[in-house]
Length: 224
View 1 (cartoon, rainbow, N blue to C red):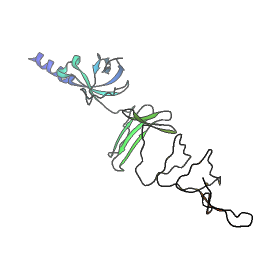
View 2: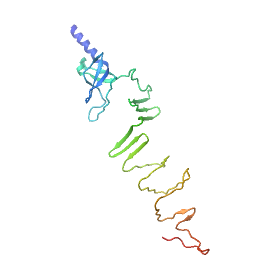
View 3: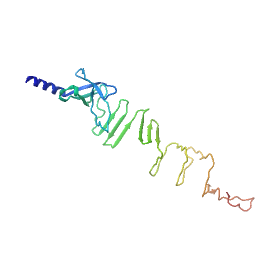
View 4: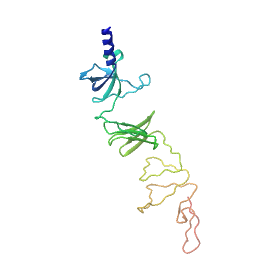
């Protein structure tokens, strides 16, 4: 009877343990955990999904974890979840914030009180969204759209800097502008073909204007 009680006590004491990850076993989904000064055999850690839809986020050396051992059998033990500690404190204490921080300084956060989502990536990094063959990539100082078509639906698009169009530029409702703050003249290198209209400069049309011929009657309109 006393042996049964002793075995039961041992099993209960082994059910839940707190340890620290020592190393990840390369090429596997297992880690070695130090528990009470003794290194465990490689054990798996839990994940949110492990089927056709799967999730991967490995623990790291130094991370404090809770280990479950069914029936107190360490051969069946697995890492259940992690615990904050002095070395790796909670990244936030705001109850309205969901925040993830990464070792390289990247931050992913949603603040429900401010309705604000933040994704911050260190300089030199990149953020890419890909759908089929189309993609959008944001790097430090550049945003690249790679798609057969890019469509803006709205009343106005404003560019604070220069805009360069490498192929045909087509507008359907006219074009208006000025020389800009620098005062430079608008210029076109190459010919301009105008059909069903005229080019008017300070009220004088290229096609419709007339000249006075030798102080006599005005000439006719310009001909093609």
